[in-house]
Length: 204
Image (tube, rainbow, N blue to C red):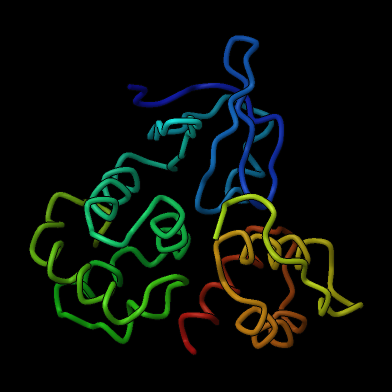
C-alpha cells in the first residue's frame, strides 16, 4: 500500500490530477484538484489511498496526512464511499465538519452531496468522539452531467470550478443556484472560485 508520492504535477482536471513520478504518470482523484494548480512548477508530496476492486484500481490523493486520516475514517461509515468522502473533504472547513459530527449537527452534514439524513445520522453514530487524532480539526467519478447553464460572462476559472463541483456530485440545480453569486465573485484562480462555490453551497 502506498503512503505518498513525490513528483511533478503534469495535468489538473476537474476530476483528478496527474502526478509524474520517475517517468510514470499516476492518475489521482482528489477533493479539489485546482488546489494543486500553483504547484506545477515544483515537486509536490501527495498522500494517497489505493482502492482495489475486481476490475478497477484507483488512487485517491490528499493534501496532507490529516486529510487522508479523515478520508479513511469516513470510509468506515456505512453508506459513504470514496466519491462521497472526497466531496465532503472538498470543503476546507474540516474543523466545522468535526464539530458537526461531535455535536450531532445532522442539518450541516446533509448539505454535502450524496449525504441524506440517514447517512448523516450514521456518520454521527460511527464517528462522534473518534476524530481527536485529526489535528486539522482546530453516480461515477468521470463523465458527470453537462452544465449547459453556465453564464456566458463566466471566466474560464469559474467554468472550471463549476465543472469541479459537478465532479464532486453536486446537482445542476444546486450549482445553478450559486452560479449567479459566483459571477460577481472575482478571483484569479479556479481554486479560489471552487472554494467560494463550496462556501455558498454550505450556506444553503
